[in-house]
Length: 155
Ligand SMILES: [Zn+2]
Image 1 (spheres, protein in one colour):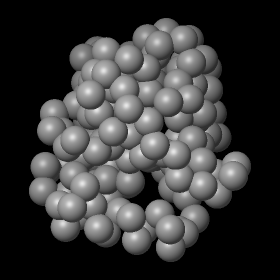
Image 2 (cartoon, rainbow, N blue to C red):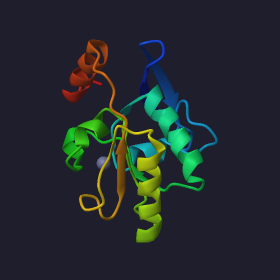
Image 3 (cartoon, rainbow, N blue to C red):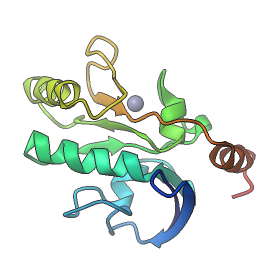
Image 4 (cartoon, rainbow, N blue to C red):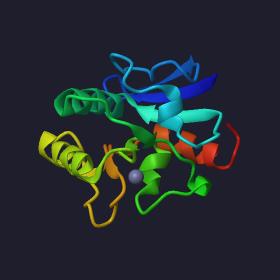
């Protein structure tokens, strides 16, 4: 059972959910993003994300039109990652398509760019074997204070 902390961009409030690994993430539709997919290899008991990141995922999945295999989304700073890992720690970034062929991956990357849903899509030369997209959001003290206390391992 994972504790999932979601920043609700519409109400400016933090919501807490408890979900099993095989359940869908909060705000996910049609079972396209399970808790175990979102966490990937992270063993963190607490996961973080935002409502807007989940809604963007739903829309991206719809636009792409087929299943998007997720390597991971959430990762704590010490669990490895790549250049934009802080977005992974905030739970607003996705590393996907590791299992796709390179042409399928390019199609997915193009879909992410043209969708206009994401703040940033990593170029193919930096992420040749996966597709990274993320949904940055304005910083709120409420959110980042909670994140930094989690960083020290208290939650
Ligand atoms: Zn990434």
